[in-house]
Length: 373
Ligand code: SF4
Image 1 (cartoon, rainbow, N blue to C red):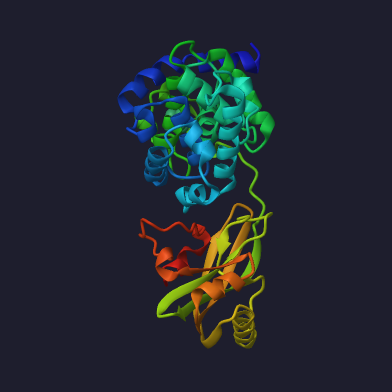
Image 2: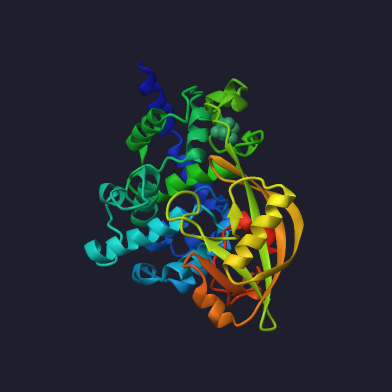
């Protein structure tokens, strides 16, 4: 018997026990209460690279404010970024809106019930198309994410490198053969749920609780932690930045100064604290703070250091040092009018993390400094 046939025989036996296990063990999650195509889609995009617990409140607020594809397609960009503020990876929400606009033009505001058509939409790849097609439309197509790959490589004691796309494709092909024609969505979610709650990634898997333990080769060989095999990631690039946290007293109110990031690259087009892309010495920081103040019609009266902070992106680490700049100015209207387009003076209270009326979205890369306002 070929290896593929062996794998198929083992895999086809997991369907029933997994479906039964899922009925009893599935977690209650907000997007499971009404798994409409729109809800499944939004939740799957939010869950990319983000923990379930972190996504819950974001999902509830997002679908409350933007209940359908039309509302999402029409939402002003700054409001959209505000709804996503803190979730990171902002290209996800930009693609979500681009996709909603395409759905309005091409499909009357509905997601198509077709895996291949879904895959052609912005921001929807193999996995997300499989998740929407199976969970929302109950179509028998696989959805292979990291959780699924971990469970399957352990189940089959398969040493293929899961960072390679051919490994993902191999498991997709195998799963396609065994996808049940009813409850495909439940089956896919059961595999993912098992990976997320039992067949754990960074700890010993809880094999005693596993419904497919008797079929699992890695467990039989006592080699669970040897799988999955993955090539180590490349070290992240470190970038040093010096931030200027302006606290400006203008007409008796406190304002802070924000700068819009370039239209390309990391955090494109989002607000940030004005910065230099280097680690400035105290003298350089003082001179830069004074120069910037003068350029914008402000007068710096004190420049003092703030604690350093770090933010990790997928491929880059920002190592930030910061300087608090106390400045004064007068006539906020005149000052605002004369600011270059990529600068903004906002009332400091806008940045308070718990301000429900704030309209300014500040990426979580600056979370450590936002607390100062
Ligand atoms: S028996 Fe253990 S290693 Fe195998 S699938 Fe279940 S939890 Fe994972």
